[in-house]
Length: 125
Image (cartoon, rainbow, N blue to C red):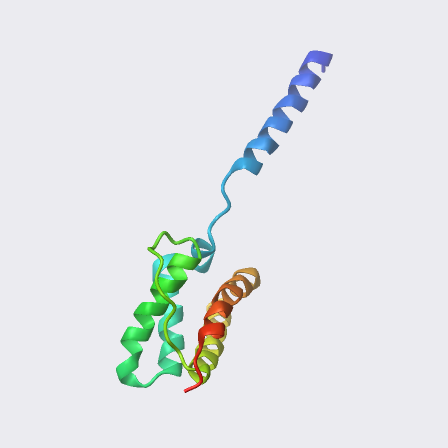
């Protein structure tokens, strides 16, 4: 290989790596599986944590909240008003659902960290 060809190969390699580094990272929402997967995970969690009348409202609020906080492109929504016990049940159900559906550990941990802010607002009822 000539010196010019070697130099060209190095330049192309560096340019290729630089363009890969500039690609936007996949959002957490995408890594969780998008709308249908997030809805399913939340639905399973809410079914475990709430009485029947509160399920639909809690599910809708939480799906929207996760979408907005994890890069899904949804409008920002207020944090749902959960008691401390409801929050604990919800998070445990979400952990079980994510493990069952093989959500990657890094994505699970990232979502739980994001949702930790809701724990701060959970009221003791």
